[in-house]
Amino acid sequence: MLHGLLWLPLLLVFVLLASLGWLERRRQSLFRTWATGAELMKLDGCGGAQLKDGHLLWCSFEAGRFQDQGDFDICRLELVELMALASGEAPLTKESQGQCRLRLVGKNLQMDVPFSDAQRAKNWGDELMARARCDL
Image (cartoon, rainbow, N blue to C red):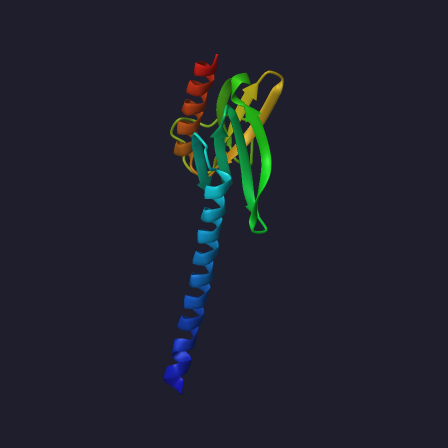
């Protein structure tokens, strides 16, 4: 009897991990359908983003579906800055790691796209600026 009770917490942990894995697989599957046909896309803990036909769209995963958070026309892009995710308005340094946001600045428009990884955000900023220059 005691031996069976010792295995019960392990069984509960297994069920919990299996259900979390199922939820992540569902999130990734929904993202694949949302980002179909995109030129550039990302999915991380802060949400998803896609570049499609010159428009950058980003969303967050809430209540089992993706909620659009904003969009930006890349043709209007003038400047991309790497900023802290939650605090401050000072740009981050090149060596920064962790969560951050890309500030997209265009003609009378400014929007922030959240990222879980600063290196990925830097790469996205470079790619977006290259695409904005190509569209000019």
